[in-house]
Length: 220
Image 1 (cartoon, rainbow, N blue to C red):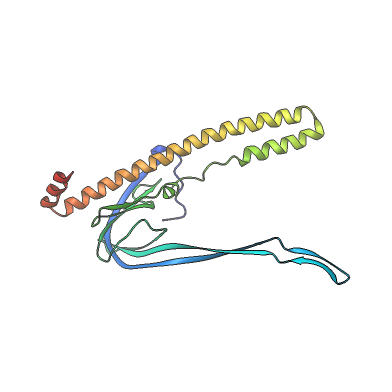
Image 2 (tube, rainbow, N blue to C red; image 1 turned 180 degrees about the horizontal axis):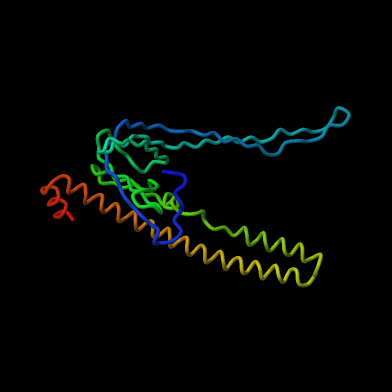
């Protein structure tokens, strides 16, 4: 996706689309990361005597499953797909639909996948935030309150903390409003993704012919 695509800022800007293609070049492996930390240690020495303790070292590792494959679309376009953390599986030659959402029609971030052979979907919640602006933060309100309290303590010892408290309360209120809007946009992206998944399933059934449509209809 192009980096100049603006983030979604209103429900009216939520656009979705999907592309269906064939899976090629499947690869699976695990990425392992080693984490090390130390604590403690130290001591003292004086005239050749004293006590020195060694630091405590702890080592841990985490493994992440990685799935990588290529989508070969019907217009001969190709796209590389990488999914980390598991939750989705494909095999060579299977048909998969890629669900995209962004502020531009017929464009978007890949936020969901559907395997038509296995009937499984991959649509993790963390991908819903990709087309949106950054998640609101409480930090600006807290920083403004601390700054005003610090300045006020030199100018007006009594009014400084009072004004700072008012700024902090106002900041929390503004943060709450932004968070409500952010959650509404996230829910709208989820609804659009679900709609596109349903359209992808129906489109795949139509492409397989009347017998497939009848099978899907009877099976629910």
